[in-house]
Length: 279
Length: 351
Ligand SMILES: Nc1ncnc2c1ncn2[C@@H]1O[C@H](COP(=O)(O)OP(=O)(O)O)[C@@H](O)[C@H]1O
Ligand SMILES: [Mg+2]
View 1 (tube, chains in turn blue, purple):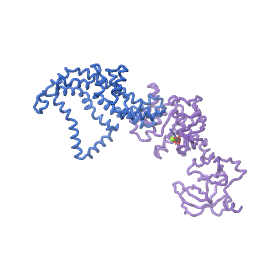
View 2: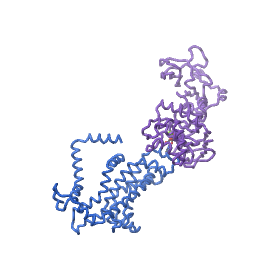
View 3: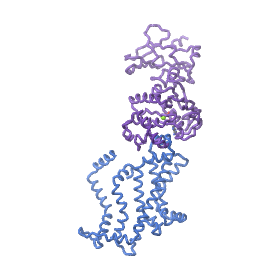
View 4: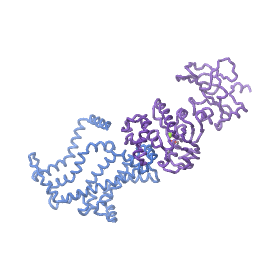
């Protein structure tokens, strides 16, 4: 960690003034929509497009948003779907990554090539086929149904394979001589050493699936499994006339858990990303 | 009560096989070194015994029980690796106790053994550090402690000292040997360093290109090398080999003596100095004897001009003889009949 701190400060010193200004501008541009959402959500409707520092603050949009849509239920759905996906991804990718990294078998190269190919396929391309499969499995409008296409994540398998492959073979050997079974070796030797990678991967996965829209829109029909993003879209549907402040308030409700988690764990996340080599 | 017996063990990834026709035993309480140049199949042999590599054929017995196909954890043996193989995320204490925890040994027993081992390898003050905070020597002790604490029947070591610097290596060598003697451990020790094998082992198994070249006590390997390979591998600097007709004569550099010129000794030879290497306690002299290059070791600091000539001789019992084609040692009595000895070229011309 010391080394890391030194490295980052060294990088900071090397940035020229122009680069710093660019970074600030980019950061500001990225932040604009969020700032607007905050502005609109906390002020009366007449100030939405009329910036005035002295505008009165209000929470009315939050009340009306909360009332108009079953946010609590949507939030629960999103939470459960994200958890199911992440949990299954961690288990599947760990097992697959270990086998591809350390246990030679026939056709290993082919399997690896297929995984790499899946990395290049946009999941949206497969929506129709996936829907058909899930309909056959009777899983339309269920939590598992929303998560199933993402569980065997090619990115996760590849990432963990690369991480496990650089764990020294001698550690694996030593653990086996000390009496570990293959699964115990995986759990006691490989997984602990890949901790930063797991953290970084979990962050990417959570933020992707928390915000995922198209597939859940297709595969969910009712409140039983509908996640926040889809709920928000229905809630902001233009038939009822667009109520921007309320949509902003709803959006803030939706992203707040993620935002809070990121702000709290910011330092760990950044360090973990740097160590995992994902940027 | 632990005896390792290896029969006709073979492993091949291509031609030539990494290990072939490996046959040996390690008796209880014995320290046996598996010696050979790098790439000769020492680690392969050791890993097959540990169960980390499956042999193509052959059998491995530990205490008369066949373990050839058991998984590594069920063989009741411990292993020390060249890279130490300490788990970086665990503390020294957790590293040492790793095996006992996996095997679900009771807490009291773990504590008792840990105290004993810590004392033995002198690690008391480092128990809560991570391996990354330790020096090479300390890592080595942790690895050793992890092997000792398992109380396994057999301890395998794969070049455990080769990552240490020369001074520490010499210290650890005697410490390791003392530990083995004190605990009565049965050890199979892989090394490419002949001094290490000579100074530590009860017996040495000399490997070359996946095959056993010679098995014997260190003095047997030194005094009666079975092949020209053994003759050159054991001893530093290596034995001088002189090819004459269908024989190879061998004389160790430390067995060649200087003779006062003009003494007229029948068995003395005149050689020309090519160069000197001063080593401190003694001097290594390169000589040219007719068309053969020889090395000679004499005590003290000797300054000899290249080109000057020397009278040298060696005792008959210090002379070894090998078959030129097979490289095998020719027995002493067979030698006497033929009376092989080094003769100068002039006699050939005269004949
Ligand atoms: N996993 C492996 N796959 C292919 N060849 C191997 C493997 N392990 C060892 N070898 C080969 O077997 C030979 C002996 O290797 P090794 O036993 O490691 O030698 P040593 O330990 O004596 O230096 C070498 O030629 C090496 O290239
Ligand atoms: Mg080796």
